[in-house]
Length: 217
Image 1 (tube, rainbow, N blue to C red):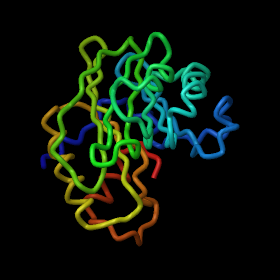
Image 2 (image 1 turned 45 degrees about the horizontal axis):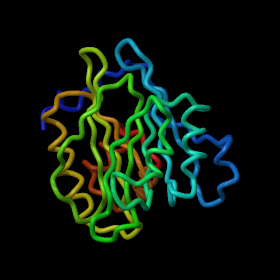
Image 3 (image 1 turned 90 degrees about the horizontal axis):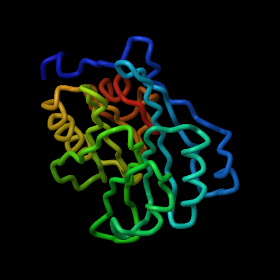
Image 4 (image 1 turned 60 degrees about the vertical axis):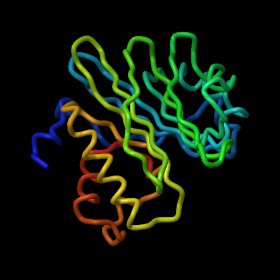
């Protein structure tokens, strides 16, 4: 692919390494929740604060998630392993502050397991982006627009069993997103240790993940 497809319109001083937040406030009492990761992205003329959380059952933590979005002043929060059943689940509405919208994807093969939800501020215009079908991970992609500027956010949940097919599926998804010609934020519970150079990953995928993603791996 042409290098231009991977260019970033985030400013050069943007920190693409998300911060692990050990002060979770309302979520601190939820022992089954993994750490919250968030980063501030200087996106054109505004700062976009994006967070990721492997929530492990949103139904039992919706109030805590709601309070965390407010206390951390997040613009977008991606949740994996929500374990919700459909888009009308009350836990999605309870987790989102009044001025937030929700886009979600359920695990169609095993309802009540897996699942991804993106909670986003109403100050952003949001549209779900169609992705090619994948069998090795769950994914949800949205296009956020503020003024005349847009970016994509791809949230991924991959179960711990790793196969070569995962990287094939991931490459196909990346190729799909390139055509949008805008910055891409990738994160979630990917379960690939990109910081480990001996990890059995194709070189192109490793380099791309290491340099261009904001993710909890």
